Length: 178
Image 1: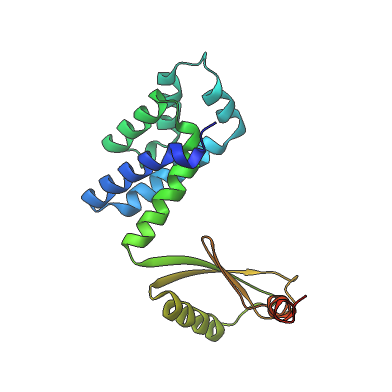
Image 2: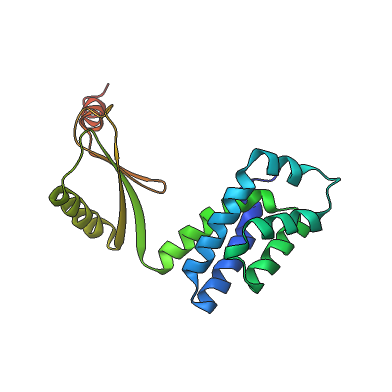
């Protein structure tokens, strides 16, 4: 079976090129987010996977539910996905598109987990540190993780900065040959 990301990649690339040409990254992000939410619904997935349901009906359903975000180009995109029976890979299309968008806009989204709630000064310091580290504009989401012993854990896509006490102890353990 082909990986969903492999199926999604050409669609994500096409959407990105259209968005870049239209200078409409945000419009496409919002539309893909709405479409992804519909595609992730369990009842919708059953409908999408049901070969007896006409693709035109499935596309019409997606377009109706996502109506506020649909223009002519997005309408055509949904029809193309429906005809190819690829609506199920919308989450992967969105993920790949957002990665391309972030690269084009020289920005990165980072989730920082800490064992305590940070004050505004600490958040500013983390943002500055990460912007220097990535050499990009950084959008930061903060979350509380009471399982961390201390420090922080930052995740940007597949990239992880483990500045937690547990992370430092694990590094020390490896360095000592255990």
